[in-house]
Length: 377
Image (cartoon, rainbow, N blue to C red; front, side):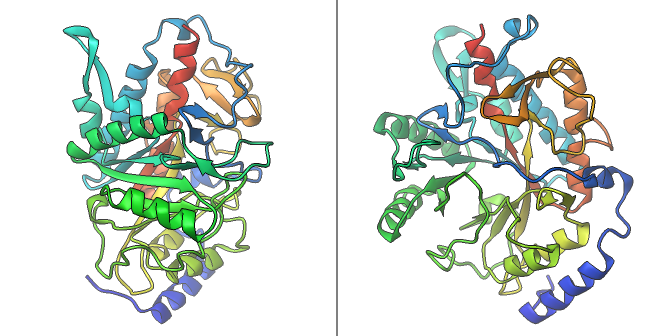
C-alpha cells in the first residue's frame, strides 16, 4: 500500500480539479445531471418516529400497497442491492441507516415470537442508528437537544446488540450540544462497542466537520479496507459550505477519520468526479480510508438524476404522495420493478453509477418507509 503525504494529496486534488469530468463512463454520468439545492439528508428517527413528518397527514396508500408485506419487501430490496453490488465488487460495503426493526422477523412456526432475519443480516455489513441516546429538538420548536426516551433507547440497544452479536458493525449518530453532552454520548456508545459520531446540527444538515472533539475518537494510523476495521467516522453529506469540489476534498484530506459518508452530488448540483472520490480516500496521515455514498432507496427525490420533469404523484405509478413537510421527496412503492430497476437494475442504475465513480460502499437510507404501509393496512 502506497501512502500519500498531505502535500502530495493537495497536489493530487489540484490535478483532479483540472481534469474534473474527464473519462467518466456513461452509467456514472447519468448521476451528473443538474439538480436543485440539497434538502436535509433524510428525516431523523427519534423516539421511533420520523421527526419531520406530520402525523396528521399519512401518506396516500394505493390499493396495491394495502396488500404488501412492507417489511419483507424492504428486506428484499436491500438484499437485491447487496447482491448486485457484490457482483461488481465482493468487498463493496452495504450499510443501512435506521430500519433496525428489519433485523428481526416473525417466526414462521410461532407468530407470537420474533427471530433474527438471517438473510437480511447476511446482506449488510452494518447499521447506522441515529438518536439512540440523544435526539435533536422537534422541528419548529426551539428546544434544546435532549435525551431520547429511555424505553426507545432500551429497544434500540436490544436490537443493536442482537445485530452486533451477528457480526454487524454498529455506528451511531447522536445529536449533542456542548462538551459535557458530547463526552457522555461518546462514552455511552463507545463503551458498548459501537462507533459514535456526535452531530451538533440544527435543520438536520450534516454540513460541517466537528470542532469538538477536534480529532476523531480512537484516531487510527492504519489503512482501512473493510467496515469492521473502522474506529471512527465522519458524516458530511452536505457540501454547500465548499464552493468547489477541490475545497471539499482538501477539507477531508486534513482529517484522520477512518470512514466518511458523503452525498454523490456536490452542493446538490453536480456529482463528485471519480478523481475527487479517489482524493477523499486518504487520511491526513496518508493511510487509506473508506468513502461511502449516501443513497435513499425508500423515497424518490426530485433533485436526483432519475427524476423526470413529467413525474408527479401517481405518474409513474410507483410515485406516491410527497413526504409531509418535504415536497422534494416522495414515498414510492419500493417493491415496484420499475423503481428497483432505477435503484440497482442495470448499468444505468443509481447503484452502478455510485460503483463506477469509485465509492467503497453505500449507506442506504429510507428503510423506515415500510412503516407507511403498515399504517395503511
